[in-house]
Image (cartoon, rainbow, N blue to C red; front, top):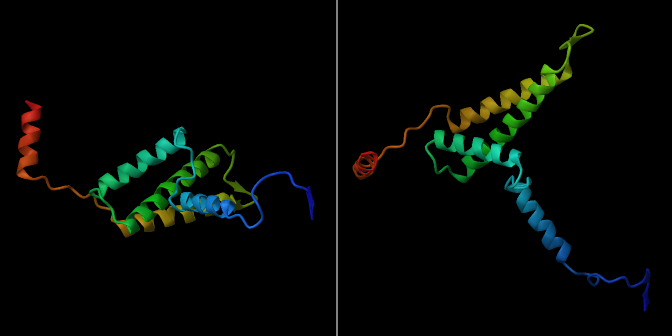
Length: 141
């Protein structure tokens, strides 16, 4: 029961597209920014920051804004990691030159600033209807 490449060890037959399907799921997960396990504290912290940004923009962002917001959250994570690394260094200047990571940090900060400028830096106040205000007033009493 051997094949061209030795005995058959099981698994899908040649030409099976299972791997392609799984690869597609993997790429979809990467595109949605969902590469982290949902049980990790990092995932929860990033989602909390994302929700904070969405709420500050008035909620219900467009798909384009969601992409920019997700990029902002990742940049905030990277900048925080770099800041922690830089704070642990004894010196930021060595042999008359700034540490190369400072350049990367500056570039990430500029990218984050540009993203925030694109989606809007001002906080958007959500207008409430009269019914919502009265409902909140009744709940508060």
